[in-house]
Amino acid sequence: MMKPPSGKFPIIKICVLIFIIILYAESFKFLSSGSIFNFKPCPTNSTKPKSNDNKIQEVVPNDSLWFHDGFVYDPEECDFTNGKWVFNSSIKPLYSDKTCPYISRPYSCVNNGRVDSDYCYWEWQPEDCTLPKFNPKLALEKLQGKRLLFVGDSLQKSQWESFVCMVEWIIPEKQKSMKRGTHSVFKAKEYNATIEFYWAPMLVESNTEFFTIRDPKKQIVKVDAIMDRAKNWTGVDILVFNTYVWWMSDIKVKALWGSFANGEEGYEELDAQIAYNLGLRTWANWVDSTINPNKTSVFFTTMSPTHTRSLDWGNKDGIKCFNETKPIGKKNHWGSGSNKGMMSVVEKVVKKMKVPVTFINITQISEYRIDAHSSVYTETGGKLLTEEEKANPRNADCIHWCLPGVPDTWNQIFLTML
Ligand SMILES: *[C@@H]1O[C@H](CO)[C@@H](O)[C@H](O)[C@H]1NC(C)=O
Ligand SMILES: *[C@@H]1O[C@H](CO)[C@@H](O)[C@H](O)[C@H]1NC(C)=O
Ligand SMILES: *[C@@H]1O[C@H](CO)[C@@H](O)[C@H](O)[C@H]1NC(C)=O
Ligand SMILES: *[C@@H]1O[C@H](CO)[C@@H](O)[C@H](O)[C@H]1NC(C)=O
Ligand SMILES: *[C@@H]1O[C@H](CO)[C@@H](O)[C@H](O)[C@H]1NC(C)=O
Ligand SMILES: *[C@@H]1O[C@H](CO)[C@@H](O)[C@H](O)[C@H]1NC(C)=O
Ligand SMILES: *[C@@H]1O[C@H](CO)[C@@H](O)[C@H](O)[C@H]1NC(C)=O
Ligand SMILES: CC(=O)N[C@H]1CO[C@H](CO)[C@@H](O)[C@@H]1O
Image (cartoon, rainbow, N blue to C red; front, side, top):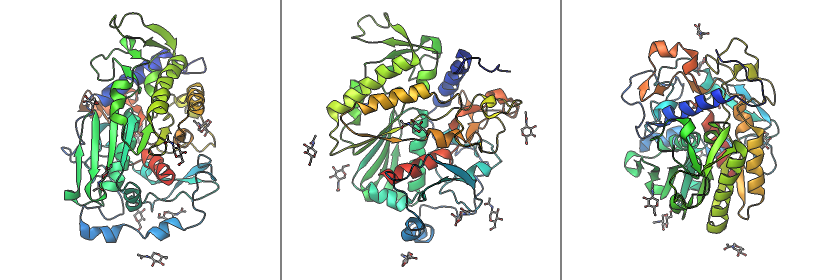
């Protein structure tokens, strides 16, 4: 049983544990979803979406109905982070991990055996306005002739997969393609649009990102190295970045900069916030020196909260997010898994940039959702957890989210900003 940390932020042990979970959850990222499994899909009342021309008219709701019911959301006017999750069993998720073939295993909760489904039926309602539903047709129209690229870690990857899954089912089979790798590309041919993901969990380079090194103590971050990979981020119309949880692998980050002539010698151990600041400034300099804001819009998804400490939400007998089935109801709940210091580092770096960067601020809305993590419905070392392993709360992944789920709401918000 994990003792509650005495300080403000989680103790090293928790951080190392998080890191190990990330490594496991990510090490088989090139494998596609669990089509080899035969479990029950996320129960929904909706007609099962089919990639079929005839069905499109039938299932895509009337745009004007979606967009003119009440006060339409305006990101400038409405603070969407101020609101609440409302349970609504009439919600029809746009996809399930059965119908969308692009969901990675650590997020395919239903395929992995999750039977409780309430987590699929919570809707985010801002207090002062109505957040429009995600309209797949509108999303593709906005992306017509454009490249949208998500760059970042596994949470960013789940946001990308969520986006792809929400739009792909209205595209006929022959009109779409998917290529997977470090740089994954989903193409919607008739729209001449791509929705892409580039794996760069710390944005800058590190020796752990391709899982050749699995010991968090050996992680070294090259805080000024971004140029090689960033070549692949040019010529894009919409860029969405994130990075957070990989910086929290330990209290101290081993940071290296310079020419690397001495291999991995000569690193300095820095506090997470200081190292994060260095890495983000490298990223900011690249954006400012390379991106033409008239051609490319730049977004940054804020940190996705981790829920590894059940005392944060007053569950004394709980272990991590295991067995949680309801969101936290307490307004403005903020747990120890979202580090405000790290948040303010991002804010300060972005404030000094020439190129405008728009935040997709998902932290507060996701903080409430202790019920929506992958938990024990995940894999370890490329294998699904056994029933015995699932019974052990300590195996719960309280970092990643089930799909469909919370990342769909991130994209619902993101779409209104496009
Ligand atoms: C959509 O709904 C609006 C308002 O209810 C209606 O005027 C319009 O004809 C509808 N459009 C279609 C294509 O059904
Ligand atoms: C499906 O719809 C029925 C009524 O139409 C409702 O009672 C039930 O709760 C719905 N189930 C889900 C999972 O939404
Ligand atoms: C529940 O969702 C349905 C379908 O989206 C919607 O028509 C209804 O207004 C929602 N109910 C509430 C209370 O928000
Ligand atoms: C497709 O989009 C790309 C940019 O992503 C653009 O360069 C190209 O001209 C477009 N092609 C067509 C046929 O519209
Ligand atoms: C962007 O457009 C504005 C107004 O059209 C122009 O003044 C500015 O020089 C452009 N910036 C770049 C980097 O091209
Ligand atoms: C988890 O929840 C299930 C179903 O509510 C219950 O049977 C089980 O005992 C719970 N496990 C623990 C360790 O609390
Ligand atoms: C995101 O929202 C939270 C509150 O919801 C706020 O504290 C934080 O400063 C915001 N972050 C950014 C980068 O705007
Ligand atoms: C993953 C990926 O696409 N990497 C490419 C990034 O750009 C460099 C140089 O343009 C290529 O050599 C890589 O293959």
